[in-house]
Image (tube, rainbow, N blue to C red; front, top):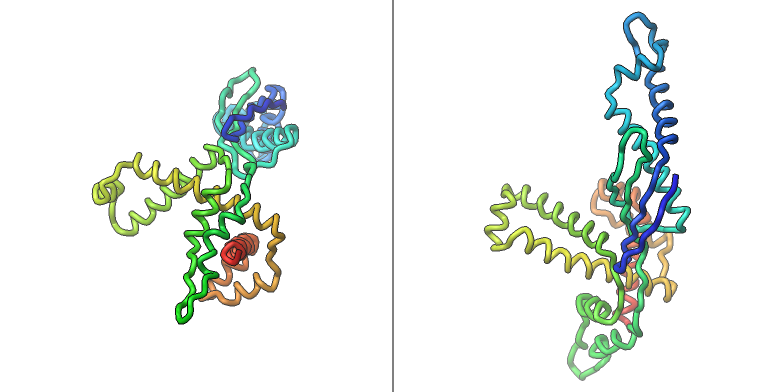
Length: 275
């Protein structure tokens, strides 16, 4: 199996992967052999029918799909290893060619973590938090909101986000909105009419939100790395103990890695707030 790589200006990575037809035929034979082991045809005991006869009884598209399911993940994994890639998202796969007697070919779009330039963020954040350090007798010091901190960080940091991951997040936000609309007993058309928006308006709004959210996430990760902000097992366990229900506790137990990421992000925001 072979592959080529194309890096697009926004950071999107396009892999073109070719699977030799000889490998396709070999895998197809393996699958048919497995099917034959459990096949029962008239005049033969279960698993004893010749593979050639079994092949005639099996839907060609089903076999092709099984071959794809078996070879595609392997080919993609090999391509990542060959080109030394560490993607941060599942690939968007598009089958280019899937013909008999020809090599199969597909493309995979993905991306890696973006390069991040925090651009001397501390000085900018200190200007925002400065008002909390002004003490006036008989007056409570002004507080800085997290929104101010995040806006200041985004204004300063330089993070180039691949279009493909923004599109993925837009689709997630749209799906979330559709679920909420259904719970309200509305159709999408009714919701759009009530908000005086089009689906294009929603997509545009979500694209801006998605890009800012992703930029912020990577910027905070970078700061946490630089400042060596970590999360201990005790902090994770304390968060789990504070669960409001048994179901919530089980969910937190099952997603400790995600919980640790959330705690680390909050600690990073607290670090910024105290600059």
